[in-house]
Length: 446
Image 1 (cartoon, rainbow, N blue to C red):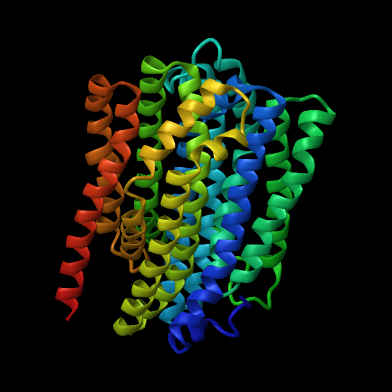
Image 2: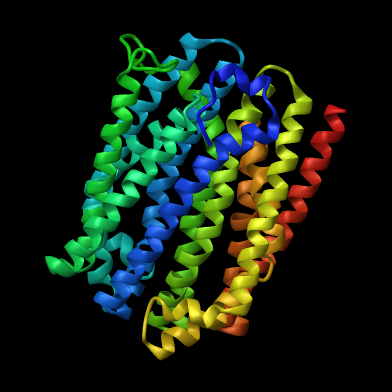
């Protein structure tokens, strides 16, 4: 998992070794980050209570919305940097770095102000009840205060990874996890800050990581680095970042809308504890989703560089390997969710009703997971080669086109189970669309 010797190795090195070199660090970082989120929820569930888990679940849409803007800038900038490096255009690659920095500052600040001003109204729309609102508000006020830091850290870390330093990017994420794991129990239990302690630990950890990333880009010996003249926003670069990053933005924005519908439906048909069950299920599911996202992050610079260099055979080879690995990951998630869901739920809470709801929901939600990895990889593939419209479409199919209508129909027919059933059905349908689009792309290229 060492960093590649030169960015040009992306166009000449063994594809399998390159995918391991780039995705390995990303997977380790994603795994560590996801495990932290799970452990953090365990701290909250065991130290604050079952209702706090439900309150935390209410914050997911707002956090997804914040992540949507960060992902748009980070993923768009990272892909553009990879393509410019493949074209041997170092000047433009550096300008992309400067534009990513400025865009994250502007959007991160705007989102923070808007979120803090309307926080109670937003959380109520997202499904908060009088029981869960205090927990959700306490958590999100702290997270929003650190929103600019979060955007900068995630965006610049993506650029660092795609510019030839996947191992450093991994260390940065591991650093946030380590600081988080040290501070969270101290703030939650030692200082008695409860759910605010968990949020404060998260922000502190990201501040430390951001400093690490800024030091990296301040080094003039790096291929991509800070220097005068790169910070002026240029229409050509900004439009490229936004166009390519629109896929991840749509994915996160749709996730926000989906979670709002899920939370409201669960509150209506199952009560606050059903929302907490979704919080537990989502934490486990995201562990494996993040592993696939780590594979996608490894694929992105390889596919982007070789597409820019017009080495199409190498582009499809990295796609094939990524699909295989992603399918294995999601099949493991399927087996765990079907075989030991109760044991997983018991890690988070001692509340019998919450355990029962989580066990039932998890078995249904993971039903189509063996094919989900394919859909996720193909959507990211189109983003990696700069075909934003197809990436946006695939990102929207699962959630906007299929899942949202199902969430509006099935809960009225099957209650809480209708919420859970909506997810595997949409997974299956969106995968069929991904198969068709990929087939047409390969046929056209041949």
